[in-house]
Amino acid sequence: MTTFASMEKATQYELRLAERMSRLGTETAFEVLNKARALERQGKDIVHLEIGEPDFDTPKDIVEAGVEALKAGWTHYGPSAGLPELRQAIADDVERSRGVKVTSDWVVVVPGGKPIIFFTILALVDAGDEVIYPNPGFPIYESMINYVGGKAVPIRLWEEKDFSLDVEELDHLITDRTKLIILNSPHNPTGGTLSKRDIKSITEVIGDRNIMVLSDEIYSRLMFDGARHHSIMSEPGFKERTILLDGFSKTYAMTGWRMGYGVMRPDLATQMARLATNSTSCTASFTQIAGIEALRGYQAPVDKMRTEFQKRRDVFVAGLNRIKGFSCRVPKGAFYVFPNIKKTGWKSKKLADALLDEAGVACLAGTAFGDYGEGYLRFSVANSLENLNKALDRIDQWTKQNL
Image 1 (cartoon, helix red, strand yellow):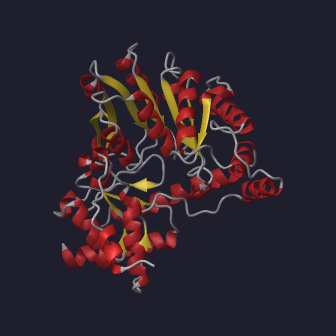
Image 2 (cartoon, helix red, strand yellow):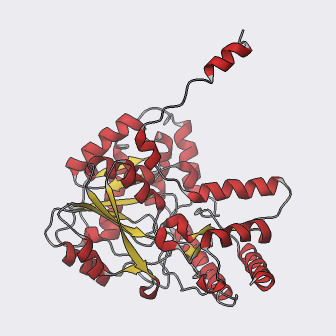
């Protein structure tokens, strides 16, 4: 029987975390989602524009492939690097989409996209090594660089350049300690993209230096206005220096299936698989069978989703630009908009909190994506036009009453 005295004794032991835990960041989107849901439980109506998740269901053929895989017994462990059939399907897709010939031993399948970020930084970055990463940018980049004791070197994305980077600035940031450069296009949180010319300029700045590039292309199929995605892996001399990160969550509305992948030279892929063995063991087998169907099956749902996101982008950006204190560039990809709110006179976090608490609109402060995000908010347009218009009305009313 547990007595009060024994309970009291148990609580006297202080939790002694490893020092590195103090360097670990977070992803604010999930914190804001939890807060928004708590408000909903209190009876408040919230428009959710905080979480980066397609509001579409996974296409039926993919779901059916997953169900059939379960029935067929794909419920056991698989290889740490992924099922050979899926790895081959990914290699074929990379050749088709990026024009780069790779074999299945270049591919490592993991539960979601984040493990590729985590594993890349764990495998390559020693204490004191420098990693250049976009800012504002996906917060896990900076979090993981700091966690392993690397030096996080932000490169600013400039609004006046449609949230692209300045290649001359990149040139100045590269040093003898630079081990890794992280690129993300289309970009979270801004929706900016790197053009083929941008990519070419970046390769010229890197030159023949032995620097690896983690190219986060998780939104590669969500390019707007007829634009085509271009990967640095396609550039001469960069196939062996690029770790391509992609996955199924955004393209095929498979966020809950937890499946992403990295494409990289086989000697590095072997090390990534070792990290998988030591952490996740493997990715669920039946989801991988569904992934083969996603890549090789009917692609019309992807095109339909992209067209709908573009329509929502147009409506939401136009609406924001009519609101006092807001100005918003038209993003070229992904499903985010990143308006400038400096003319409101409010700091990003304070304004995001007020819009949630007082207007019932959940969004993220730009500072959730780094220091250079101050003066901006991020909204996800992965919601219905009805809800997007409702959010615009609420923001407009709030600004009229408070600015």
